[in-house]
Image (cartoon, rainbow, N blue to C red; front, side, top):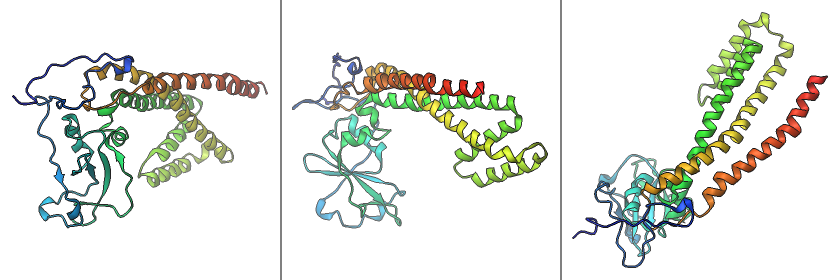
Length: 305
């Protein structure tokens, strides 16, 4: 009977709510690999490397698109090369790559496209440490923390969009030209490669509306709009990330019960709970104190003058 044909699952109920998963427990001596034969496709091919022949040129048939390769050194002395991080996923799930294996990054060549060893000394880390810093492989070793980080990112994006819409409506109510300048500054700061075109469009807009603009106060208006954009990002960082991380942590804890993880992964401990609940709570409390102790008294003082 094949080792991947039949095996019953047990539910390792652990102490923390963040460790209640159906991810397989750590393997011990004599244990078998996780049976995912029905769900997994054929694993990505790995090329064994002879240390003595590591400097030999690669054959032309192995040429591929330029990419950053990975060199995995197993505890038994074997060395494997993979094209990218995605190629490690199936071997990790099948238990073929232990978490104690070491990872070394390989640089991409400028000519034939075959990954070659970089001239700069590469930092060697264990597979588990490196995978936790990689977005594609992080769920295999830290399923809850991976969703917590995604919640932080999506929380920032959603709150930033909502706050931008709110500020845009406010500026258009004050003056449509100020609202257009606000959107223009945002596009100018956020555009990756169209900055010149956006800058020229803004100059044309100011020239077209020159009769309705007080150019003496224009610099102060633009400076205030920069401050408004800074406020948007701060607001999204505090309230968006602060709201997204707890939601992501709860979602990750629920999804981790059915997650497919590395068979020898270790528990995440209290890291998701601390960063997912305690840190956002402290950030919310700090923001509230700053708002009521500094921001509100400043506005009241300015309005009373």
